[in-house]
Image (cartoon, rainbow, N blue to C red; front, side, top):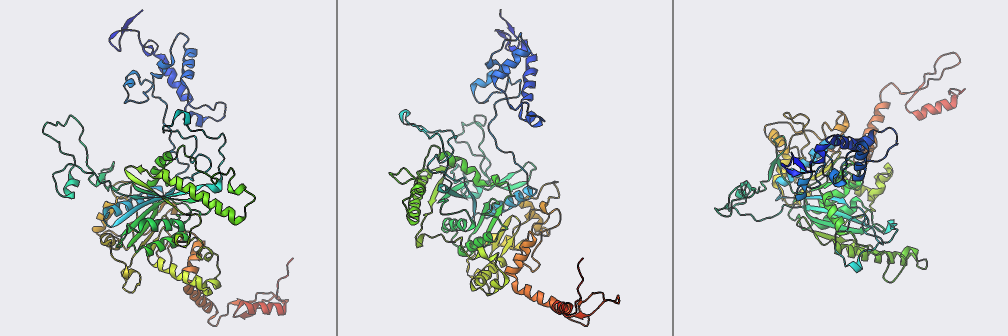
Length: 626
């Protein structure tokens, strides 16, 4: 009954995979037929299953090999262990490279051609601002998915990982249809900071601690083989090509500004107002700020609204440098703040925020006996109460840093009004005519303010930069304190702008690192022009403003709008000179080409088209349509 097992070297049953080695190939082939890749290759939907269960595997083995008697657990142990750290992992043979996978959503629907370029550009900005971290503040900003009220704040499909009394556990309604207008918009602003940890080191200076690669042993009895050496953050790291990069932190204090969707929208004005409130105590003395965002409509660098409100933020906070940089469209998952939303969502699992007033069974919108003002006031009261409860659940910590929630009142008083409003004349400026832009005092003042921002800005396809100038005649810049002297020196040596990603001469299909770029500039290399060799331009080069503005114009409509708003006087002067040039000299431009009865051309010339038209109307020199 028992035989000597060759694999274990002891008495016992021979393992099934040794007694019937053919089942290994059978299992592997069956798994391949039902894999995700195999399903994608099918031309017909005759089979729609992806993956198999242990019962299906066992049944297939018994059908294919009737003489084999095998259990589900034995089939399972032919594959890779679910967790190699567990003691039970030694029972798994690993003969079939398969197991139940973890859920992933890393597949991108399409890869933007500028992804590599923008990733290098964002890395340049973060490494440069971290290089001068004592002068700069780095922020990652984005909105979280809207939070529901009246039903579970987040989907009830999330796993509950909290303890409740057995007789008082959560019990949700069968149907959870959301009220779209009653949702709450959480806007996140991650102020990235380096962790301050105390480490044993004999060096009294921070420089000595930074250069120490490993910690010293606590006593002479400690042996290196007893535990692994712990590396200390040195501020730099090496990539797979051996190039040096500056390490920049990706976590910090998370500020979440909650506001009701019924009363507010997500726009550049509200983001600028939130950042003004958060950054005011952090940037006193003329510091610099980097904001990493997505490329959505509320943060689009090509938008005039984004340019205007970021310019207002740069001016009012008296910053030396303000940079907003984005990844390529469709790749916002790379933003640092995206990693904070998963733990925040876990904070809210099981929470149900109220969408009705206390003691009432109907939401305010369903109460027909209310006037419009009463309904609006009651909706505001309910939403403010829901935001207050939401903030109470968000006062936690994330990666050792505090989560700081903020509430925006639905009906704010005069003192509670946002710093920047969304109903500025800028919304109608883009559709205004030339006469209105020239004669309306409000639009004239707004054009003057925008021109001031453009004079101090660099606008790229995926980035906006503001920097103080050195002119003593500039009323604003001459009064701003210089709080970022090292960063300003670096940028002014780079033609007064952030570096543009530059292809490496050593590593093919790779951009230079920031340190490589700075080294090449110190050796006399020319600074790469704005958005030079951007892949989406297909080698055409960026269309810059011909009048000297450092702004990229992405379309013909953008060129015309830029000319009308920022260069209206120059445009009208150019058109006047053009009209004079067309009518000057002995040769008149407007000519009558009507063929007379004798077969000759009329040939009369006039200064203007109006005079030519009058001539044709009076003499009937018009071609008859058939």
